[in-house]
Image (tube, rainbow, N blue to C red; front, side, top):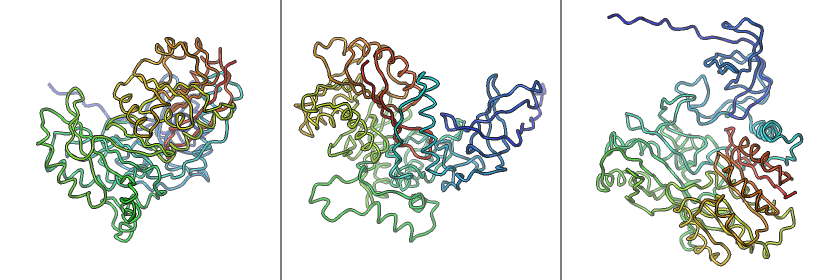
Length: 500
């Protein structure tokens, strides 16, 4: 039986679109009247990747829904003064294959920062019902490149580390990443070679983490490229290695922790530690002269086996040393995490909190990132986190820093646990995941009504949604975007709420 051949459709092009705004998600927004499939004269919203507000562009449409369309810029007719060339070989619609990790490398950084402030305001207005949000000027990143300390790679059929293509589940083999720490790019070529030689078809994901790096020097995109297999300039490569891999002569004597690369392999099928050891030995031989490594394998039921190195990562923020489990959550931009911490502490300061007399709650506390900083200032802090593994590390971190007398940690559901507390608390800090606070937790906060609430958010839309719920008992006093994720639309923010 002959199969019916489907004729390829001609791409639908929208010519001369004026890009008007920028949306949460990173796309610019335009409006299109009519199209090849709609001559009714109605106006449709088009979300456009690869543009800058104010530009006039031609757009290839690739998705059509009832309420909107999506497309990619294919030609810039009138460019914005804020448009720039991207230094990444994988960024941009015109690159093939392209990577979907960054959305804004083509926009200069000042405009990126302004866009994040605009998005935060827009979410408060539209989703939070706050007509005039009390925003403070955003805190810009100290380094636009090489800031991520934690990256997850997929492994393709050729055993090469990959990212996903833009708007696709297809994989893009990666030789360098301009937003990841330089050591991660340095590791990519030896990682691919070691996977192919020793573990072909046995690994489907690799997470690479690096730390401590909070006090690292600012990074330039060309320095990262020089460390990749794509870099051909030996002088630039040597300069980058000297900058990032050289260890201060007195570092060992002063007991300053050395930066370590951690590789967590998500294994397929049956395997043993001995199966992975040759891979670890080859990777260590390639990288150990620059940076020590740790290798762990993760199997079924999240079984984790140490192959070499130490079973945790270390990072130091504002004088507090944290030990972090291999797949535990920790801020992926440690340099800016320090600024985030200081912003949260300053929020409490702004309402006159007396630290040494204060009792504070830290909900979604993780390994104690904020709780230990508040304890260091003299407060009595109770951290609550549902994940038992994180709480074990939080307790160890309190002991490591001599703060166990000020910081207690409990593994529990925060929304249930705080209702069982008899003692009053002066303030609460919440740092929920991207989905925002559990509705039951917001209900519990409205019942217990602590005086001050500091909300650290990684998603302005869920922050705004939660602010609307909290409005029955709290007033938003201030909010500031803190840019931990340059070149992308993602942001952190710190918002201060006061009980009405």
